[in-house]
Length: 127
Image 1 (spheres, rainbow, N blue to C red):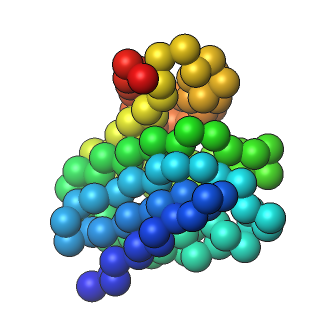
Image 2: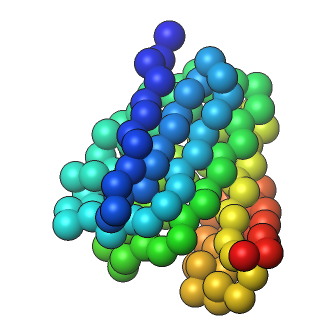
């Protein structure tokens, strides 16, 4: 069984929970690492393992308040890995959360939705 991946986050790094047993997949907070490749490398490696034997249904929640340009590429790469689940006949959906009035995060979500071949829902929150 794949081990749970948890990272508590910090002032500049997002919290990450990847828990197959509890069917919980979430990234939240700020993503402004000095080296986004190194930060996301173990997260992407975990997802690579997970997609080999995923749950019947996978819902991936993104609650990012801000991310820098180097994080965009890594986040996109991470989310694109989820396409494998769909190709193998199992259900996957990304929920992209953003605050009302946060056009930057909303626009990035719209762009990701256009580029990814995975069901993708934009979820707006008041404040």
